[in-house]
Image (cartoon, rainbow, N blue to C red):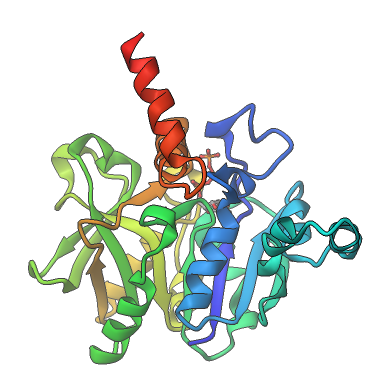
Length: 291
Ligand code: UTP
């Protein structure tokens, strides 16, 4: 599997005013913007072609993955080796592609924009506003690839057990078993707590075969007036296609940068493990708690 699709076209309205003129996917968590962690996570598991589904106001994402020759030249002339090393990521031997979602009709619609890019191959989808594991060190996509091959799946989805009050924010699965790899019998987009089939929430990483596009073609407008990816996955299950879930490990939290509460938490956690500044930040926080 070499292709990944990263949808980044959303307006990020829950993070206004921070996202008025900058993409939420470019917000820093610790030292790096979110999309850089995601690309690094996927390169580690063998992905080398990335398609970003973008929109107006998202060009800083393209600039970030481009080589800034002027900046490199200037740092080199000044002998700033440490800072130069921070730019090594833009020399990865991978290819970036960009296409625009011309109407914001939801995540399902964003994925449809990737159809001709992926062709007949299975592909990974990683939501552009979510990190998995502290410092994004998770190998969840590799485990999902194993599940995909072992069970000849049409779709594999990462899931995390979430506290009850978070259930209405996510797609929720009805699992067939308690195993780490489990068949998904049903999936519901943002259910009320009482109607939720479990507390297993979709955790921002997916693998699909191109059959997802046929399902998306048949998916009508759902919750929030948007074409929901979850509804298309539900159609796959109803068609008798094999859809599996893979659980995140207990040390692999999904950091959702879509709202301020979890963004703040993610930033603090990542900053606290920063090699250079983590220890003194912890001391500083301790002094705040004491005051
Ligand atoms: P969200 O639904 O959390 O993003 O989508 P949003 O619409 O930007 O957020 P709010 O509700 O206005 O605050 C998760 C991911 O899917 C992308 C987003 O950019 C984000 O990375 N997305 C969402 C699209 O690419 N297109 C869409 O139509 C919707």
